[in-house]
Image: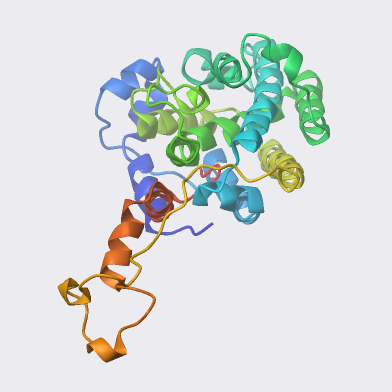
Length: 327
């Protein structure tokens, strides 16, 4: 991942109005009001430690083949369904442990079930993909099971580290996940009404940027010593590794699936007709390129959904890439 001007702009916005964010009684107040002037983030703030401490593994995660293919729009529908299944099991476990620890002082300020919880949205997506009997048709993969076991262990024995898993997942969903939503909708030709991608829709977050500011400010206000902060950063790195194992597992499954027929065959300009009508035709008739008119070929290509998808993905990567689970 490139930590570029996009990251710098987000950091600048995040530093503004921090005092008001910390004192905001709820997410709604923060999202509905403009932030004022405030203090800047400190290098010892947990959000900054997490950002700096996970850069390397973050880059590794978004350079896995699964994520790169996804961003290009080369995602098979069956593989997307299996990824949704993995997310369902992961979030079901995470949110069970969040409920268990919602009053724990090391996690209570991070409890935003209405704004963040994804289990119900994932159930809706699975209903769309598998039908009313979806529970009987899905199963938990080995890599996902390992991820779940770690989250359960943390929730039951080290709840102060639960923030690492919540932060890694939810903040990524509100950032790079929004890019993936658009790519998936076009690549898989999903309904414009949002079926199949409810996981990426946060109906109760009216302003994602401001909500992320609130979330990070709440994290930074936790009463944690340096050792605990280091442990949280270490656990966040572990969370990324669990995600990469799931991605690699999906890659192996994807290699066994047949390619989805998502676009029809097409033909470029065949070189017949009056090539002089092509404004980019610069040669004499005797030296015509037999592959056809490049101008007409370009127009045909630009009309193709697959090409439009690739272009959209490229724009999304330039404008939004912090890609998979950017903080």
